[in-house]
Image (cartoon, rainbow, N blue to C red; front, side):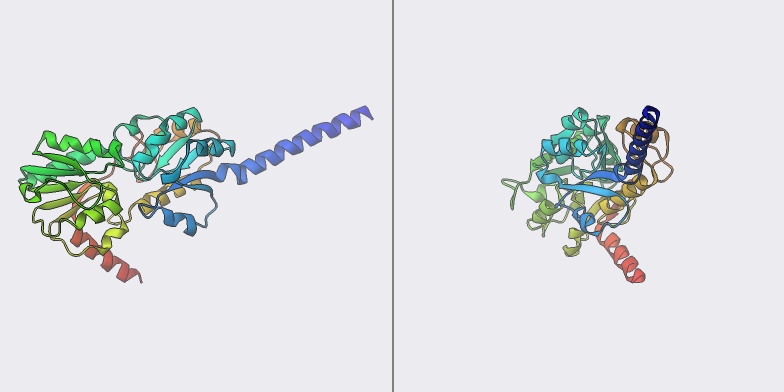
Length: 312
């Protein structure tokens, strides 16, 4: 009888372990945090995704530090997002505390991408700034106005390096006007605002004739409502799309669907040594190198319209 009870006890333990393995494989290993933003198109993913991954979603603009503790309590090791550097700066220390990986589709901050818990599918700002400087030199620009996002300072401050090459001024844009700034004193305006603030800024520059250049943070499908601007350029990471963060979010989803990670350490170890997308691995700083170009907005918009018309 004792031997029977012992054998039964062993079988129960084996059954419990087996069920735990099954639960981890089909549920736990497919569960990730998902941080979306109302500032860009990323919030659309929450309502449209119907794949095999399970997302515990939060609005990154309202994210609290305790939310990360909640995600960790659910066995989450990897978070998809955030989309903006300002959001991830708030939770940077908690990512380290709870040993969580933030796999962002779009952050580019120089400072944040030195954190071993933060990865991005697009290049770091120092590369983007170099491309912008080269473009402005080609256009014989002398004086530059930098319009910076006061709500995303950790991102915007990287663009101050542009003024090491050109004369100019940097200002933070809060609402509907720029005090004591004469726009015609500048040959070019570089805008690092979020999409909603960028649209507000366009309300005060309709007559500006110099070059207007939008950094990656300002680019979203909401720009499609703008009238034609012959002098408007945007930074393009090679996607040829206005709502490009949706592309990188889908790349992340595809990536996570193909692999299962027991821990954040396993994720880091694997993807520093293996390719992520386009036969590239993450750099040691944790970002992907992409072919950055400066595109004329009206031409890109026309190409997108033609592509969408052909696909209908």
